[in-house]
Image (tube, rainbow, N blue to C red; front, side, top):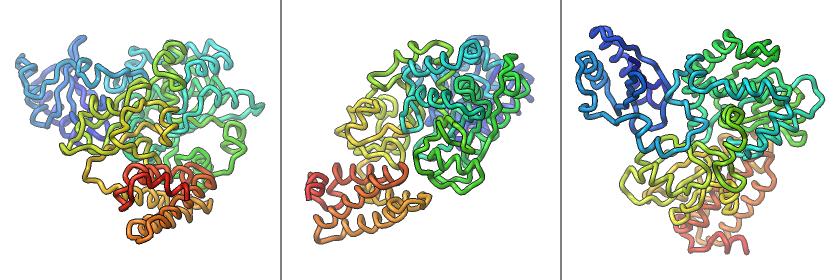
Length: 521
């Protein structure tokens, strides 16, 4: 009998380690034939620590459990009692509505597989995509990924296949794959969950990317704030090397691919691909000017593919089940699924993997359960600290890259942070500028100076007698940052600010339609 308790960072923060220790002690004292497996989280964070008991083909969940609950469950097992009578009983894991109504492709194994058991990974469908890729030409792999419609899940939404094709056609003998796991956006945790709960999926995706582009070496770059993910992934790389999944003879194919693990020092700007490359090269994380783009001249001056964790982890299922299978999810140019992370004032915070086309309202109310405080929800910031604030009356917008772009918003990495009517939206606008001022690499003037001036202008706008002049100055400053910054750090900081001016003008003491009148003047 197997007892699963997550090693996931959020679960551990809520007491999962003490639950696991209590289980081990109870198993030892009762003599029951069972053992504890530390798995990834299913993403039902309001139910963590979640404990699952698997016997033969059945897997039952209990949560949120305490150490005392865990001891009681093990002793009940040992005595042959009815587990379904326990007050924390949730039924079969797969039938929990929050999970059952999702479309889990990239995260299908997370929470089910033993993260560091390569045999378990393969038994649950792992390596099928890689084995298929080893029988294909690089051009065929790139075509499959292109046809799937996969776009970058890190925020830029650039078509993955086009990026790979560009690198494939470069004549250089040395090429690199970089996995950008520097997940720094507020309210996001999908990369961490994947690395902690199913690391071999990411390794498999990186190897396939290498086969597709001619790269033989990969780097995964993550943050020091993720100690559990770092520990798990380092061990997964060691296991993959020992098993021949990595090295000079990948699965006996005579193909080469190595992965090196790098940990950053916590700079948000190193999530930007060129700053990240500077950091890997041992330099200060400063943004590079483009062109040249990394796919042509990237790490150490060589052609480099830089993809987000979720982008690379989506590749194995595309190769295993075909481009059409993946493309059949979603709508328009937004194909496949996206892991949405629900945070903030939300009753059921956690991860939801869903096909594009679901509305923001459904995500917040159907999956998130609405407001945790019980007060009226008024806004959601989507896409991290550089994303726009979307007011409650516009939550029927579909999750779609183009639909969001049309209202000057971004899907980004899929983070959704929800706010109720107690929030001071003018302070949230100021925080956007403050965040940029703290995290800017400082290379370009619009970002470095503009963010500092932005805080000052917002303070002036809140207290000014002449609101119109202050508002015009704020719009001029935002224009300069958007059009003159080297990267999205400065270029997107105005997004949340302008969305607040447009939808919540009263927080600045402004009349309605302030954004439009300010731009006209």
